[in-house]
Amino acid sequence: MSTEQAAGGAILTLATKQSHAEEISDWIAENLVKTVVELKKPGGKEVLLEVYFDNTLEAEVAAKALEEFPIFGKSIREYAAEEWTESWKKHFKPMDIGRNLRVCPPWLAGESDRMELVINPGLSFGTGNHFTTRFCLEQLDRLVPESGAKTMADIGTGSGILAIAAVKLGVDHAVGADFDPLCVEQSILNAAANGVAGRTEFFQHDITEGWKDETYDIVCANIYSSLLIDNASTLLGITGKYLLLTGIREVELDGVADTFVQLGGSEIIRDCGGEWGGLVFEA
Image 1 (cartoon, helix red, strand yellow):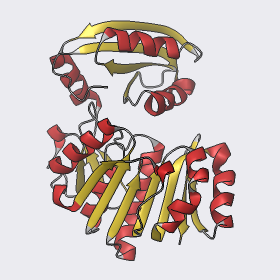
Image 2 (cartoon, rainbow, N blue to C red; image 1 turned 180 degrees about the horizontal axis):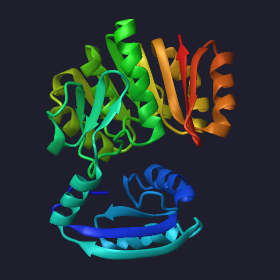
Image 3 (tube, rainbow, N blue to C red; image 1 turned 90 degrees about the vertical axis):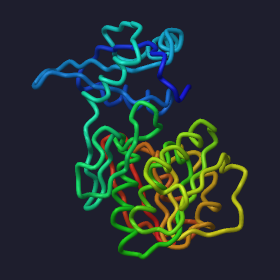
Image 4 (tube, one colour; image 1 turned 60 degrees about the vertical axis):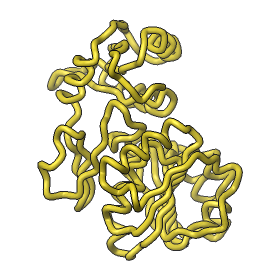
């Protein structure tokens, strides 16, 4: 996926019932790494989901992959770069998280006394809209100031938003790793846009290959449940104080939690958002 949108692209519009919108949006975010714009009328039971792609072929492939979902209408049309920009400006609103944080797009930065996490929603890989990202931000908002944490590692960093937030909340240095080089590239850009480039480091890495011999006060891992379970000993081994886990389907929470408890972790927080869940362990 390109991180540039200057030439325009294609919009895939999906019509579905409100009750199915979250399931479809979650799948798109997880598998296509795209942010969904949801259009609905107040009180209505049907919604339109818009997904922006670099070209028509990408949109057609995505539409084919979504055929098994309860979608009763879909269309694909090309758009100009100006339309893409204006659409995001219209639909992406600032989001306050916890006591201190606000996620906002560049065009709305500087309008709040909160600690702003400036993320371009159309170019990023995690904006705080999804439960998994929001859960970690809420926990960081509380744990960093309370614990005095000075170091942080983010496994599956995506947009880099968690590492950026940790530094703004008081961590001296944060590292972020992702197996996708495009995520690493975008994280570096986001850190620079937030003025924390000198206190963050992002690199390409696969957690299944282990980790260097270092520990961090706080570790976040927003990856698949199977990866959390298979790499539990590694994640606990690099955690100094708190380990935040998400990317977990609610039905998988017990299995993930049991694995980390058996290896010596102490579960202190569990939260769910209907389909997704998150866990916090104390080392």
